[in-house]
Image (tube, rainbow, N blue to C red; front, side, top):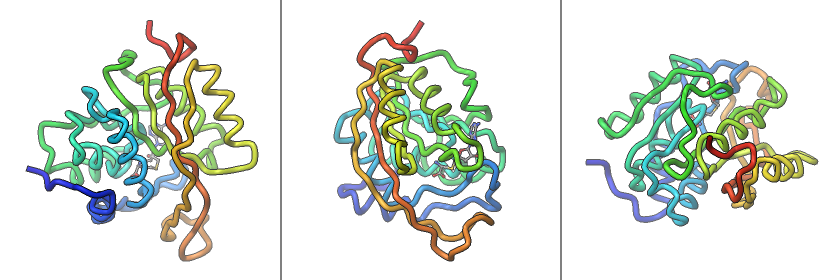
Length: 218
Ligand code: SAH
């Protein structure tokens, strides 16, 4: 039985303890979502009852930290997808206490091997920021919104970045809520991080489908 969490701080501490990537792949922008940022996002999804849907989908699950937090807060099940096998091995380890409640899928988030599931699921993800491959974040948002009617995501704050997301939300027939802005602190894991701790601003968002835009089912 997983330990119960009663405060957002408990969640943060539990997530911070999880295993990190063994040898992060730079081109895939692999870094574990820090506990504070992950907890902020998952707590919001919990408060809005979006974790109570049948499945929480973690796209680009990496270490599985977001799925882990969602399951801790009572999500009935999680589906974790990543393009990288070794990341899925770490996720399996990090999720082992939830045996029977999660599935791991190896696949490309840009062309999901899944039918749209609408209100049946919520996506909780921290996609690549699009630093290594421009537009990767937008591709993830498109896939996520096509799959589930509610999407939580983290994006690097940049001039014009939020406007781009707002336009995309409109195109997809989604309402955009900015949950919070936060500072992400990453220990140096990737080669392009020159400083020992790399800090930058991120924005946490929620997309909720309101009309039958491009993201709608069928
Ligand atoms: N949320 C995770 C990982 C964030 S890093 C965590 O906190 O641990 C982004 C993740 O997206 C990496 O694990 C990377 O392997 C994955 N990824 C990158 N491109 C992908 C693609 N096209 N399809 C699926 N996963 C991808």
